[in-house]
Every structure is written in structure tokens, then in C-alpha cells.
Length: 496
Image 1: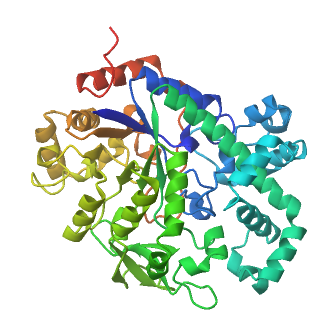
Image 2: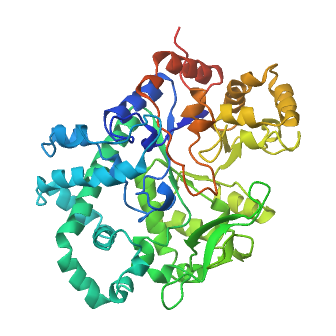
Image 3: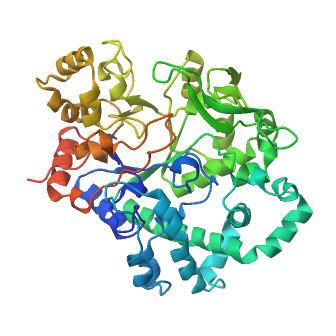
């Protein structure tokens, strides 16, 4: 079945409170998708953000971002009063998320709601029991982080940092109430998230979520389960993750995440990964796994290197991990982010797994007519076609930045006369392709400029800030997308 999707993270939804929420504007966006005949809503990781405000660097692989908890819903439950959040300074730019303001003001508001919440609530207790495998440790981790002024866990006192049993038992007693607060936040988050997901699913809209392959060093997983990672006796990484230098990044990309001890994972039958995938396929309808090629082989950079120029490739678990997961969980709906250096071995792994990979049209016009991202070279419909991902420019920004040679080729290929017509033609190209799913960022349907870009890889700040406006999701825009979906058999018939 041919489908279409729009990439729009929760943080980018319109909001009076500085950042997108899981409340009425999220439901309104679902209504917009339904009116536009779009059956897929793709988002970025829902995880709490840490360093650089990136959802790909999180304190937990399981937790949801408290910033997304809707205050108005808490008010309806009698947990907040309107003036407690409506009069707060959430930032002055309606087009950019001010993460400093959000960090400073969000938790004091949520603390007021927590003070009115009955922790004996049956729903909350059931949630605690259901999520017992990760929730108590996450709550304690966040309570300790707060008690240590936000410093990363390696900078805590050594017995606690090394997760020694006696110190942890004492910490659970000492920080019980603060840990409970962070657990309650997760209950509120997931209550609101699953209400939104159910609303979408009832409208025939499926959610494509995103999980990073790696976890952050300053995370509850590395703190509590160091055996999962390549660390020394002091739980310091010996090597970290990244990408080698290439055309786009002369010094490579130094992500800094600890690497997995794949020998240990293999011995456990990939138990940790299987649990992670089990939860991800519950939270989302389809899971996009970032940097999928890293399961075949991954780039290891010695810890402490200033760039990614020094490193080596090492073998990963390959398809064995996903075969083990399939044996326990059954078939999973997964998209493999197969961008970057794709070798024949990576392609073989993808074939064994059977997951669709990605085509990105913004990569298609720099290397001639033989480029594999150009639709005439697709050898199968089993792929997801993107005009651009969250790491790319908006189509308008991309068009403005193209060199003369690429512009000439793109205009000939897309059969347009003017550079300004390229963005719309790119969307049509994705939708007309044989790919089973075509996806564009919401910014591109709005013809947003380069300033609306979500992320610029290898830059430490200024990312993840794009915000849509209340007036962006008009009936006219929905009708235009619906006509596009109907024209290329990716949705219901267009309305007359």
C-alpha cells in the first residue's frame, strides 16, 4: 500500500508555553493529517533532552520528555491552576524554542502539580508496576542529578557513581520523594502520549517514532548497567562513537557515546536490545532506528580524541540481533536509517533483516544521473523516500544553497524553469516515486526558509528549536496535500 507521511516533532507543535505539548495542538495536528489524507506522522525521539538539547542525547532510552507534558490537561485533572503556568516566561520568540527558559521554569510548575497528586492513585501504581524494569532507577538517577546541580553521574561521589549497593540503598531512602516526582512525571507523560497515539490510530494515522542506536554516557543505562558498554574499571569509555571524515564533515562527527560490548550482548541473547525494541514497538507503530549501518560495523574513536579523524571500524552484531528479536517478539515494523557509508556488507544485512531503507532526494543531485537516490534508479518499492530528514535543510534553504551545476541538473530532471519552483517539484518527485512511503518535513509544505532547519549535524548549539505557528495548518494547506496524495495514490480521493 502506498502511503505518505509528514515529519513534525512534538517540540515543533504550536504552543503558548514555549515548546510543543501533548495537548490540544497535538490533537489538532492529527486532525490536520486526517484532512490532508496523510496516514503517517513521523516524530523524533520522545526522550528527555540533555546536552545540546538533542533528543538523540538523552538521560534514558525509556523515559519521555517532561517538557511535552500538557499543563492544560493537568489543570483539567485539578492538579494545576491556570495562573501557575500561563503567566510564566516561556521565551519571547514564537518561532524558536528557548530551552534555557523551558529548563528553568517547567519543573517548578510540574512540582506544583505533583504536590496535589495522590501517589496512591491506582493508575499510577499500575504504571509503576508495569514499568518496574526501568522507572525506579530513572527516578533515582534524576533525583541524584538534581541534587548534584545537574552534573553528570561520573562527577558524583564515587560509591554512588559506581552504583555500589550500600550507597544506592541509602540514596533510595534519602531521595525517595524527589525520585517519586520524576516517576510521576513519566506517568503523566505516557498517559498523555498514549491518549494521543490512540486518537491518531483511530483516524488511520500511524506513528513513526525514532530511536538512536547509541545511548548517552550521562544516562541511567550506563550508570546502572556498565556491563553493557565498553568501559574501563572506573566506568570511563575506552572508545566512543562517531563517523569518520567525509565530504560533508572534514574532521568527521564525534558523537561521544559509549560503544556497546557486543560480546556481552551476544552472550545474553541480546536481552537488553530485545527489551528496548519491545518497548519501542509499543510506544510507536513503526520504529526508525538511527544509524542502522552501525549494527554491521561501527566506527570506534579512542576516548579523549578532539575529532573523529582517528578511529577504526569494528564488527557489530549484524542481523543476528534482529533475528533474535524476531524470534521473541514476532515481526516488527522497522525503518532502517541506512545513510552514510553503505558497503555491500551493510546491504546484505539489510536484505537479511528485510527492513526498508531510506532514499533522500536532497542527496540526489550532486553526483549525476547514476545516483541511487534518484527515483529512476530505485530497484524496489521497499523503501522510504524523503525529500529531506531532520538533519537536512528545508527544501527552500536547500534550493537557495545549490550550486549552479546542481541547479541546472535539478531543473532538467524535475522539468521546472525557475529555481524557486524546485521545492514543490521535489515533493512531487517523492510522492510520484515507487517508494512505499513518501515523507516530507512540515516545514517544506509551508515553504519555510533555511532558518526553520531542525538540526545541523556536527554543530553543538542552535538546533532542535523550530516551532510552527497556530495559523500554519490551514484548510487550504490540508486540501493541497490531500490533492497530492490522491494524485499519486497515497491517500483518499481529493475533495472537490
